[in-house]
Every structure is written in C-alpha cells, then in structure tokens.
Length: 542
Figure 1: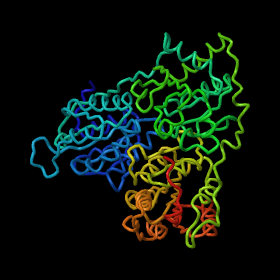
Figure 2: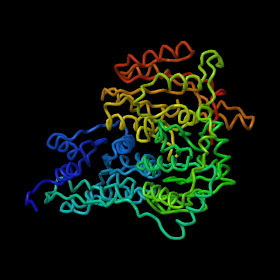
Figure 3: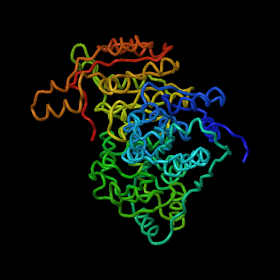
Figure 4: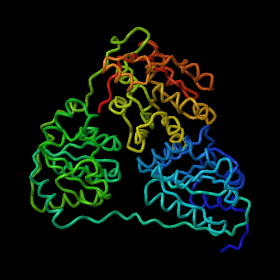
C-alpha cells in the first residue's frame, strides 16, 4: 500500500491511467464529472465529449476495434445509462471488450429522481456488471472490470455510486494479468476425422472469420499447400488482400461467379467463423459438401450451422497441424485454384450512370466511383440499413481492423459515433462512413458537430432515398402504399455546412464528380449526400 489518502474520484481516474486508458469517451453528469476533471487536468488523459450517452459507448467500441485495446467510456446515472442500452447490446453481439464507468445514484437516497436498478438494466443487454463495492476497493474493482472485458470479450459496466466520490479512499496500483496463450492443437478422433475429410477433398475452400484474423499467414500457407482459394466472412473482409486466389466475402455478399464456385466446392474448412446465415445463405451453400469448423469458442460451433467435423482449437496452430499431416501422408495438392477465373470471381456487376431518375444518381454507379476515388488507406464504417450490403461488397478495406460493421444488433444510427471513435484511435487515417438518411437523422446529426470540433478527417456518405428503405420494400412487395415510410428530410448537405463541416448535394452524375473532386481537397469533415430513388436501390443481399 502506498499509504496515500485521496478522494474516490481521484483514485478512479488514477486507476484508469494505470491500465493504459489514455483516452476516455463520455458525457459528464453529477456522478462522474469530478473523476473526468481529475483524469484530464491532473492525469493528462484525453476526454472526448459526446452529445449523447450511447454515442460515447459506440466511440469506445470502435476505438477498441481499431486499436486492439480495451475502450473506456463514462456516463452518469439513470437516463445516462438507459441511453446506452442499444450501444451496449451492439458491443455484446460484436464481442468487443470495453469498460463503461457508469455513475449510480447515492446509496443513501433510494428515492432519488434518477434511481433505477442499474444491474438489472445492464443484464438485459448481455453486458457484464461489476459493482464498485466501497471506496477502499476502487483499484481492485476497476482492475477486475478491465480483466473481465478482455477475457469475456464484451462490455463490462462498472457501477459507481455517486456518494462515494468525495469519500476518502486508500490507493494501490492494481492491474490483473490476463492469460491469452493460444489454445491447444487438437488431437484424437476429431482431428483424424477432420484430416480425413480434408485429404479427400477435390475442390476445397479455406474460410476465415473474425476469430482467425491473427492467423493470416498460416491460413495462406495451408491454402497454398492444398491449392485452395481463400475467402472470408464479412468481419474478416480484407484479410487476404493481395493473395492471387482471394475470393473476398463468402456467401450472400459474394459476386455471382464466386457464389457459383462456392456452390461447386466439395469442402469448406472454416476458421474462427460461426457460419452465420449470411455466410451460408441459410445453409444453401453448404449442401453437398463436407464442412469442418475450427474455433476457439465451442459455443460458436453449431450456433448457426452444424458442421461435419469440429475442432475447438487455435486457428493458426491447427492450420499448421493440418499442413503437417497432409505432408506426412503425402497428400497431393488439389489443383482447384487452377480451375478458377479469379477476375470473374471478384467482379461485381457494374452500375449504369444513365440509369437514374432525374434528380437522383444510380446508387451502384456511385459506389463504383467512390471505391475508385476514396483514400485507399481508409477506415470504413457502415451504419445499418438496406444500402449497407452493397457497400460491404463494393467498397474495399485495407484489413479487417479497418472495417466497422454496426449491424450486430440490427440497429440503425450507430455509424457516425463509431466513425468518430475510429478516427481517435487512428488519427493518421481518413475515416469513411456510409449511412442512410434515417440512420443519420437518428444517430448521426447529433454527433457530426463532434467530428467538426475534433477536426477529424471524416468523409460521410449519406445514402438518401427519403425513406426507411427496408419498410418501403415490404410495402411495395405486398402492393401497399409505401408513403408512410417516406420522408421529406432537410438538406443533409446544408445541415453539415451549418454544423461546421462541408456538405455537397449529389443529384446527378455530374454532381457526383464534383463531390469526388472535393474529396481530394477536403479540409474539414465532408458530407456527401447521394439523392437516390427509393424504388431503384438494390435489395439487401440476405
């Protein structure tokens, strides 16, 4: 023990810095303002103030994804925490480690206006809950929250009673070590069964999911040994960039030619993937082939699709082990890659600039042009909405850490806060956000000025079809009037300019070229508003 006496709010700030948390996202209230003040003024930490509590959580989630560290956010009690429910659920579904320091109403004031059972609220989201027990246990409780976030790979909410803040507390630096040694190499009957299926395959595909992004070189070695093409799930998009037999995304987001090639394969070896129904096309792409799954988390095996063989093990170590046994048995390469036309397999149908109603642009053509014009070293963030699947297909990323998919909970309006968090984590990289009009109204318009205040290199593409697109399509499919799902929004370009950025309205192919020219000259957050025909936006690739 250092023997130093200090107030609890100071001990909290000091403990955050002990954990390397030099960036804190949040919105201050009476339960956390003194802690934030001490963290900044005396600890040298950086505080990023959000306009909405849920945004601070989303910023921390994106910061965690891009930086590879545990993101940290803070909000006050009651409505400050209830405003974070959707964001916390998004983080849980995305398996993102972060810590949320949430104030709680004073223990001695059960009738406080903002009192709520915060433990029960957090449980609904699936996030973990850690109670700050006393002023004397601050360092331990914070250390345990960070430990749990890393080990459980989900948000952990640390509950801080407001009446603790001005109580004196002892302080001792405390950081718990986490043990993340790779899982064992499998052996026994399950391995023999998997090796047998792999050795007999004639047209195999190596598939990597988000749980295998650290095993790129070993998966490439296996694919080269087998002469098998490589593919990824959405969350591992970009992992195999530069490889001559990279098919990109596997499943409903594939090109038509790649989809057919996958259907013709006789074996899929999936590493770190749970085989979501987007990936398997609701099981259709797995028919007639052997499926082997390698995943460190046994709960992910069979959660969405039941394979023919499964190994609970580390992706990289297992790939090396498979190569070893193929070599030992002198199994020849399949020659499958030699049968593939990779140019056709990776080419999506092009858009037509002339195929657009007056006052609008063709969406697919706009994506093709933006793919060519946007900075190559970008971080790509996507909001929810029917526009997003074409973005995932057509807009590239340098690597999986540079892609933020805010669709884990099926919400809209989460994209801009995550784009801001990504920009804080990697200030040297431009961040590109694709969002819909509904999503921007819901969760973007309230944080665009935050990006302006932070002077971020941010490019926002608002796909404005003046409708809630998914609902619009459902009305049309049932021959019903879609007008209830249509909106007369304000000019998002004008709003962006009013908020301190630069806004450009795109209503024609010529306007699109003007906007593309502005990308290269940007000196502040840039918003490009694509006016789209709600009846001419491609359907989601489900």
